[in-house]
Length: 302
Image (cartoon, rainbow, N blue to C red; front, side, top):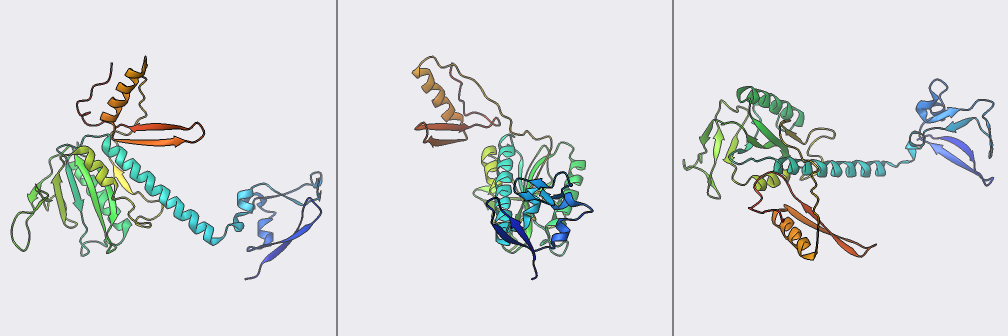
């Protein structure tokens, strides 16, 4: 592939030859020079400590964009997607734990390939959005937290937490034996055909609100590329509670009071993390506590 070449004079008097994958005249376009990251200098500005110059770099990121190799660009995209998955997983976990899903439903929706292309995320997403619009019209108080998962076959399906409504359910029956289906002692249901017509469904009643919030977050990002870049990995009702930074100050009079506070935090914390800070040779303990759900009878120390 042909390259354009420029001779660059350095501060120590040496010179280097720099090659570009794009024509230099497009970088130094007189019509719109700033779009290329380069500005043409006027006659009064051309004198520099390193000699006369015709152009000045005014946008390093644009001018040196060709210096990033395709391998590095692919690595950056991979890291960006990994970070996106982590953020989405944490958001789903936080939203789930900040709301009480007791007596709600854990729902799985699949898509019949004879009805729609279940391999296409955008087709499935549009179908789910339309289904949610119909359900919200039928059940104005319905709230949901919904995530997409890509099966190993390549087909998409949906997992959702739903509350604030009474769904129309029918007992799930084994097609071969005709017996009712139970999973870990819990009876499994299906949405009635009036509620969902796009494929098969499974529904179970939620018993442990916090556990199911942790459970549904694990469905996000089992593998890179499950959801197209820039697309939603989850959907949540706007009316659901979100995580807020709530801090409470304790006044510690003596070591005994401090131990009471620590014991109390251990009793209500969803998770505890310890980090050793090498600079001050001290271990810092972080308690992650969500507001939703009972605090196991814990009473704040006085």
